[in-house]
Length: 236
Image 1 (cartoon, rainbow, N blue to C red):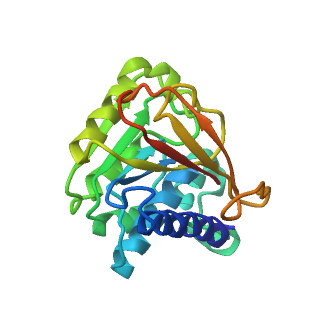
Image 2 (cartoon, one colour):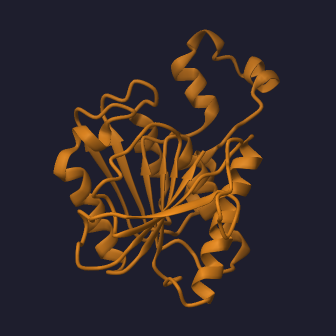
C-alpha cells in the first residue's frame, strides 16, 4: 500500500512536470500539501525528488497533523502493542518521516492541532526540530484543532499562516495537495481553477490526461484573490 501511494504521488508530480514543460504552469512555483498520512507521502515525494536531483522541485511543503512514523503511531494509539519485536513482525508499512526530514532542504510549514486525538502533536514538533537543513521551517499550533477539523478551528489564522508561507516563496504557485481522509473547506481555498487528482484503489478516470485527474472547478480564493492559481489534490 505504501509503495502504491508513493507511486501515485510521483505520477502526479510527473504530470505537473509535463505541464510545466509545456508552459501551462510555472514549474518553479509548485507546493505540496500533505495532511495526516498524506504528510508522510509528501515528505517521501520531496525526499525522492531531492535524491534524484531532477527538477522541478517543490517550492515548499505544508504538512498538517502528520506523524513521525507508523511505528510511533502504534505506540500512541495501541500502547498494548508497543513492542518492537511485535511491530517488526506485523507492521507492513512504515512511513518513517522522521528518518527523511533531516536531509530535506525544502521549506516546510507544519500545521498542528493541539487537540489532535489521533496523531500526538509532539510528532509535528519532532519533525520540525529534525528538519535542520530546511531553508525555512515553521511549526504553527492551533490550540483547539483536532485531527480532522484544524482547518475549521484555526479560523482565519489557518489561512493566513499558509498565505505568509506561500508568499515567502513566491507570488504565483500551484499546489499538489496530498490528503489522507476527511473533507476540507475547498470552497474559497486556493485559486480560481482547481483540477483535482484522486489516487488510490478507488481511482476512476473521467476524460483525464492521466489516471485519476477529473474535473476542473472554479473557486474563489481566500489566499490572494488577484492571481489565478491551481490546486491539485491527491487522495491517499
